[in-house]
Amino acid sequence: MNIGILCASDAELKPFLPMMEGTETVQKAMLTFYTGKISGQDVTALYSGACKVNAALAAQILIDSFRCGAVINAGTAGAMDDRLKVFDTVVSTEAAYHDVGRDILTEFHPWLPSIWFAASKDMLQASKDVVGAGERVFWGRMVTGEAFINDEKRSVVKARFAPLSVDMETGAVAHVCYVNRIPFIAVRTITDSADRDSHGDFERNCARASQISADFVRRFLPAIGKTVI
Image (cartoon, rainbow, N blue to C red; front, side, top):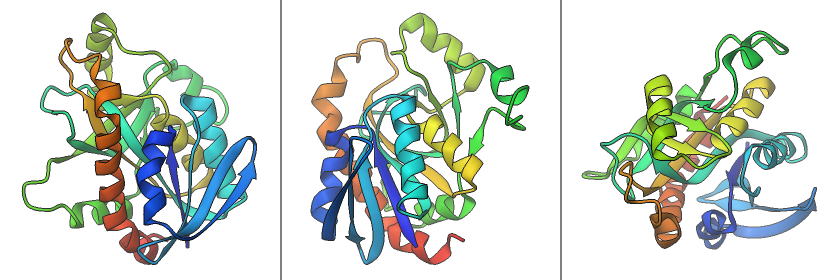
């Protein structure tokens, strides 16, 4: 099985490329797809660009053109839960949009049963099986939207969704995988904490956080290829 690894930025994709063996590149829809193997597992990896449409486009191409049987959204995120520290890793149990009306998803085509898109149980278990002693990994909700969260918006999002983290792509990738019946999970490492004084931390922490996320994904990739159906 081929597994798709979808990152938002080139910085988030960068740690994966040295891990890949037999790498070839394919250009589609102004995107560069890298195919090869990581830890013996067939993968196709790329960065999509930020925001929901770019991520959704890339996810659909991974499924249609590269026949990916599972998709991992990897990279970085901002903390929403006060327990999280910079460089902690969050793994999605489910994802939703914080900037889309509930009825848009549930009252119109395709009449979804919920605003939440659940992660694959097999992929969740694979992620739990590789956690090392003392490693700070959290499992829970992620939310996605196309605006940076200010202090006022943060309290509203936390009250409505109770997420661990926020980003601009996870919900869209999860949505695409849901309608295609493709197993999905997101692994995001925190670049900025939930306190109001941390807004300038993203650029400073992105490279290290991206490496942590990529290393974690690499460790459970072989198990996904064996267990996810």
